[in-house]
Length: 172
Image (cartoon, rainbow, N blue to C red; front, side):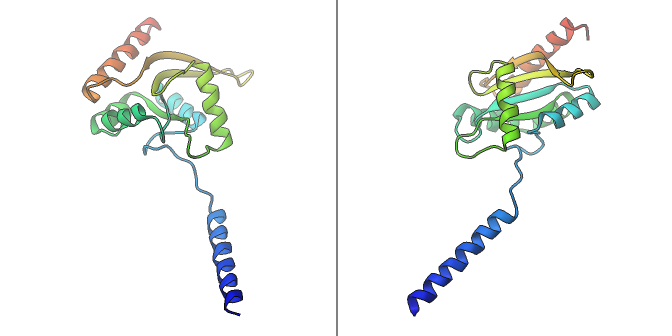
């Protein structure tokens, strides 16, 4: 009799845990607050503000240099202030210990192919254009970076110089 009560208690507990975990699906978001994970959302803000998109191709849960770049640059006050004035932030993640939503995984793989990203971290700054007739998207790559030693005082000027050069080439 005790074993039946014990098994019934375990079964009720297990079913309660399953109900709780399945009733509220966890919404996927970037590892850093303020970053987008959906290219369409980032594009909308980019079009409204005239700012290019800064895409961080990363492995948030496994890439050591990605974690260093995040800690030394992306979460600093200096970077956040610069980014607010200059770019729209997009996290393009390739995790190993959790699964991305299918639409985000497909989007990230497509961006990786389009920009020929072969290693992490890779940072691309780009603008997008949507063809009103076909709905197709084209990317105008402006600047590429990765990890640079020296924190935001080195990283930001290096990237800004590349963005400025691209803007000059485009006649902006």
